[in-house]
Image 1 (cartoon, rainbow, N blue to C red):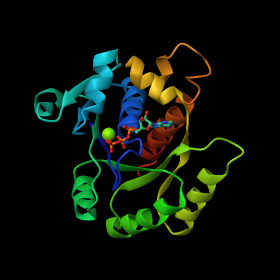
Image 2 (image 1 turned 90 degrees about the vertical axis):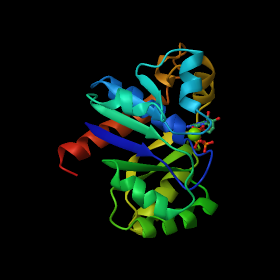
Image 3 (image 1 turned 135 degrees about the vertical axis):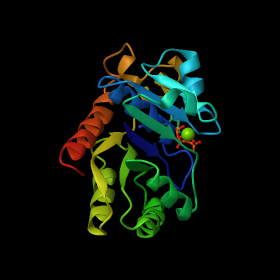
Length: 201
Ligand SMILES: Nc1ncnc2c1ncn2[C@@H]1O[C@H](COP(=O)(O)OP(=O)(O)OP(=O)(O)O)[C@@H](O)[C@H]1O
Ligand SMILES: [Mg+2]
């Protein structure tokens, strides 16, 4: 069983969206449960409006459903305190910290990274403005330069995500080819995670 926790110091940075789409990715590989620890119950609401290809469990009931599954994805609220983040990191195989590429997010991300030290975590750039903006790549390089572990994959900003939330499906399952295009970003992220695990990291 592999456990991935999605968290961060800030609200509204696509934590739940990331948890839902990673759970979608892993549900193609094995039995997957998303544990909804977001007080807004974003994932439970999402699945109640439509259909998600994995089980969503309220965190208060998760103990009963997680055993025997291959992948557990845990969605959490924003955790402004790095002590909390450190404790969370100990309870999973990988901690993912989504972050938006803007100037004001860089400094807090660097501080969080410093506090996390050698914990098993990765930053993920999300809601990245589309080409020709280079904001995503610039922030990624800034993080790399500062020694912060960050995924090569980035998730673009796309109107498909709120549409998928409304329809209660992963963006992959939207009808129009154009609105579901950004699925390839989460697919690339999933591939990157698997590759790292295969390399023993
Ligand atoms: N790649 C994206 N492109 C465009 N909009 C996005 C993207 N990812 C997420 N969003 C939108 O951003 C908003 C916040 O996303 P989400 O609820 O996943 O964030 P969160 O970090 O879980 O928030 P909270 O801290 O409240 O739990 C939602 O309206 C969502 O549809
Ligand atoms: Mg959330």
